[in-house]
Length: 244
Length: 70
View 1 (tube, each protein chain N blue to C red):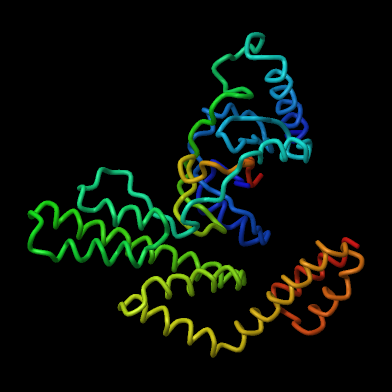
View 2: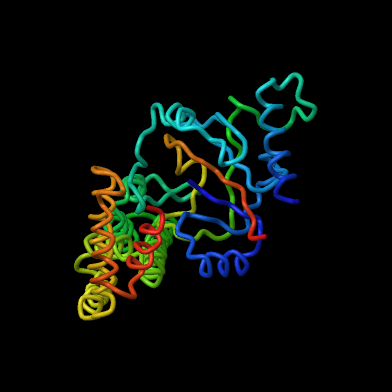
């Protein structure tokens, strides 16, 4: 689900922070006119084949429509680490580009760097490879920044998953070293470790909701509030319990 | 007041699409079955990965919700 607004970054950022919004949202959405948006809130459902299958008020969307839209859906190739450049790359970079698309950023970076340092390709191919290697590393750094933002907002599991995945991809590189040091720092941070334990307990509680329903899982949420006061998970658990 | 108008307009649009593109007074708006237009935004929040666009989301179902902070 993507919640898009055409408003400025500052406005949306302030709103997200203040209201504790956790869904994926965007500021500066520029294609509103192409979608025929004429009031808020409104929603469009796009099926797995890329066609519009429903439009209307978000509250009137039925689960049967969602089920139909999900028919034939495939998971994203390469996951969150998938990186695609929109320009033509020299043929020598085909393998590196495929690795990047597949989310194998460390492999892609190593391949592109090697071509960039090799004497055999001509100057323009070497330069193209060096630029591509730089772009891959920049993207990896962008992912790191997103992970840090997640940690700052106490989305611990998500943030750590990204940092650990990046560390794994960039083993034995300078960037990988930075990530290892950062992860060690996080492991030593009592506050963050407490948030992490609370987040893990939250995940367990949500799994219990799936299995046994909200009423039966209530004890787990009460446990979070008691054991991890002041954490983001405790805040959410309190709200969850109010809904019972 | 604004919210009521927005709901009314959104529902009205939905009904227009349901009736069919032929009777829709503004035939250039995308209706059911047509290909989704592009998704372009300047900044994404609570998101990990490259900026979402139709290419990167290919093969997935998307619920695009249009909202404002007011």
